[in-house]
Amino acid sequence: MWIVIALIAPASYAVANIFDTLLTTRSFKNPFTLTFYSSLFNILFIPVLFLFDTPTPISLQVIPIFILLGLINIGYLYPYYKGLQSDETSTAVSFFGIGRIFIPINAFLIVGEKLHFAQYVGVALIMVSVILLSIKPRIEGSIKFSKALRYITCAAFITSFEGVLLKYLFNQGVSISTAISGELAASLLIACSFLMIPHLRQDIKKHFSLFKQKAHLFLTEEIFTFIAFTAESVAIKMAPVSLVKSITIFTPFFILFYAKFFGKRFAHLFNEAQDRKTTIKKIILFMVLSLGIILVSN
View 1 (cartoon, rainbow, N blue to C red):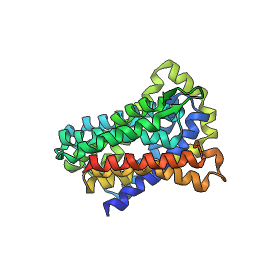
View 2: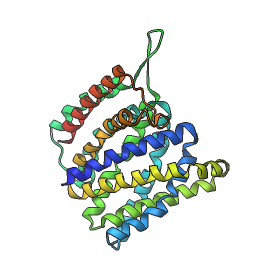
View 3: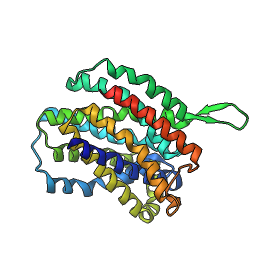
View 4: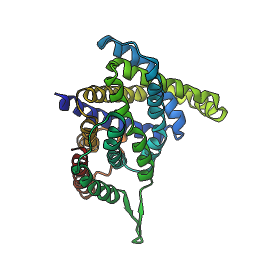
């Protein structure tokens, strides 16, 4: 059952990634401004959580965990948005796979999940596939590596702590609605602190009219992010963190699927090369990456 729930996450994250790319590459070049406006929608989702799951009281000892989750939720967005600005959506998102190396280690250190020898076997496959995906041939014959690799690796490292911290809260008896709403509330407060920084406040104010024009895109993106995050959190409560997080690697496959079937009708939404050679290359390397993650997650 948890696998079905977990698969909702990559299918929904893929939609959110597509809209994030649209917003960050064509409208909001400053990641901090985009982060601020995206975080405002947390106000809408917190009450929704309490309609489906009863909140639970929390102890003082878990408050720092909520603060850390808020920092993670905000902190990864800058390198994430910069990564989307630097490469095709599916390729940039696939680089999150490198973060799966950190997850079993963090899961062992924080919640005591055991490490097995098989987890180390997949590291080489992950590294090889990520490196090949990041290579960008130049016309003169030399090669360069995608800028998105270093940005998304940073974002992946930051988010690798999120799942295990949520698992810790669940182990402490915190309900799903309380855990998610606490993270959303903390991230909203942190994002609002951007207004205290003069140049960020000016940029946020400057883009307010554009935000109103693009509000429907923000809402769509945030709805799918909320669905994905909630499904992932429910699955984490039901199964080991490493296994649940490994499911999200299917996100690039969903992005390619959406681009294939909706790309012609909604071409403006996608930042994907649609030629056969590039698509086949991505699919093969995504499969190698997935195999590596499966081995790491065992």
